[in-house]
Length: 273
Image 1 (cartoon, helix red, strand yellow):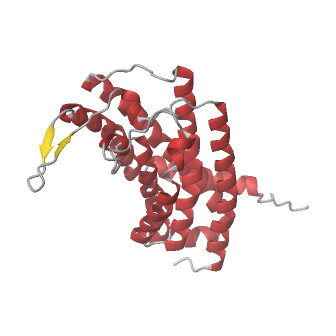
Image 2 (image 1 turned 30 degrees about the horizontal axis):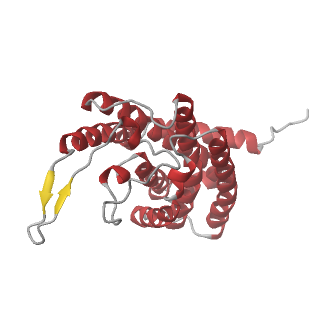
């Protein structure tokens, strides 16, 4: 009788790793807390900015008056129209307005929290060391984490978008589309969803570098994320088209593969504790 052993291929290991990671994500209380925050944040932002719109504050030292400006329509919290006059500066040409900063693009920094917490828990609990000893390879781990956390980050973007619609309806803001149409809006949201595949691999590298040190991984992720922040509104404007989607796909594939290789090397060359 000849004994045959089923070959443990990358596909089988990767599939098994994906199942485990998705299960851990869906059972994670932190994931649902983050999603709830993403859903409620735009509702509160739109309600508060609408209430404060037009209010005047006076600097007691200089006597200078500052008028609070709210959103003109719901879509401003999702993005701006490419080529439109910039609304990010005040009348003096300096500073950033509240509406230009409190939008969906800031969510790409929040994605760092999801990635770093998810990976740091693996190292803190000893799960990673046991995983690599028993069955999985570091390549499987990096690939699985990348895909699962891209999915989680995309859910955060969708939650914020839904919250924006709810917040706009509650605050009574206009849903008028000026300079873009429904098709552009769909491409805009799709581009933003795909763009998370650029940021997740970056945050994953920072997480495997810091390992169980959550504070360090978040700090490193925020520092690197700041350098890429300005490309978000340029790649995903409200009047996005298929070319914007294509650019985000190319960036996601390039960053995902390239940075995934680096993460794999880091795991192989450094201690797991």
